[in-house]
Amino acid sequence: MKLRIRDNSVRLRLTQGEVEALAKDGLIAATTAFPDGRDFKYQVESSPASVKPEANFTASVISVRLPESTVLAWATSSQVSIAGKQQLDDGQLLELLVEKDFACLAPREGEDESDMFVNPGGGAC
Image (cartoon, rainbow, N blue to C red):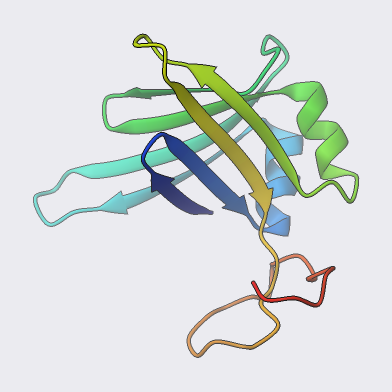
């Protein structure tokens, strides 16, 4: 799973196996370890109680929660992404995007793309 954060936007890209696991198990998670012994974690959760994409940040964990019905439909279709906006306490919006991760058309050295989705567009990554 890849995580990209820019200002008030969070984007996650999931491989085929991760999309399947999210649909089946309801949770996928990743951890980045740091030299001081602390971990940064991020996860995507599918929940029958969710009605729209939402995120929170608690105890060094970014959690994105998606409606279960939306995840199941997305996982079994050609739909590329699930998007949402969440209002923050100060009135700003946090943009959320969970996408299927497509293989690049031009191979990159050291990049394992064996579990990525086939690129449908033939364009650049």
